[in-house]
Image (cartoon, rainbow, N blue to C red):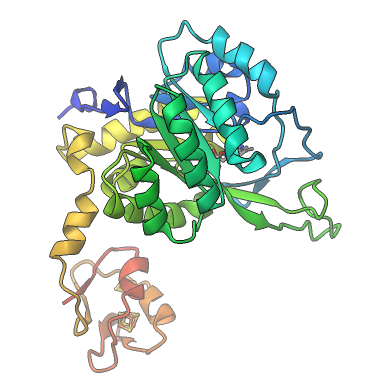
Length: 364
Ligand SMILES: Cc1cc2nc3c(=O)[nH]c(=O)nc-3n(C[C@H](O)[C@H](O)[C@H](O)COP(=O)(O)O)c2cc1C
Ligand code: SF4
Ligand code: SF4
């Protein structure tokens, strides 16, 4: 199958997106101009930066690379509610889906509902409320739902308490979709040459995005998709076509990125779209929608094993010694240029399987 034959189009809140990729809240969608610029790239849906009542100034510096593919931020910068209303109106003529995101965590549920009603008059395709407090979020949804006609969704912070119960209440209160998750924090990164934290905020702490947070998000999306039957936007540490496949397999309809395009440019969306097509075509998967929630199915089918042990395929082993080095049970041994595993010593932890450069260790 050719990559261009793969269907990447997904249905999201009544819109047919060109692909599942989302540019979620962040500086790249911080104004109408920036959103227009982003719309030139392979993005299915865009979320405005979190809209607050007043413009906020961020402490300098407020964005920094951390590790190879992670990002720290203390980004409060915002153009403020009045300017946002003008900017959203300016975007009325558009050929992309726009979700307006309200930073609920900075206002009361009553204020959030007032803001949502005003924003809805400017013509967004959906409204999202972002919060850390489950009770406040539920109350904000209950107050907002009767006052706006467009689809209403929520974006959750990492590790939302009482997740299942909260989600069910949110569904009963009328949400149409869920996004997870916001950056993880507060966290602290220190420059060991100077002792200074990387962010200019009061105590120098910030919020972590990028590669390191992806496994937290993947489990989160898996849980959300187990608890409720709504479209989910998975966002956190995505930067390859394979990541999009993973997040779709655990139940996402759309898959967001912020750190990756901030670090490597908006072209990252075009690269990930291409990469995703190539990955699926190589496996004869002609429609991204066909793999959604595959992981739930596999987990249900899988049997838990406690008797699996590692075995080396001698035809492929290069005798590199890596398994000998990592095995805390000292089960792999090398003798006369041949590496074998002493089955009685192996406890089947699986570490050697995951590090073998020849991919020649199996659990049997
Ligand atoms: C600089 C920066 C600013 C952000 N601002 C917001 C925001 O205003 N509202 C929000 O809900 N999330 C905000 N986020 C979180 C992102 O939308 C996203 O949920 C998070 O970064 C995880 O995705 P990533 O690993 O692809 O960056 C921001 C992230 C970054 C890096
Ligand atoms: S890590 Fe793999 S290739 Fe290397 S010695 Fe062990 S089995 Fe052989
Ligand atoms: S599975 Fe674990 S215990 Fe067994 S050989 Fe590999 S690393 Fe050692």
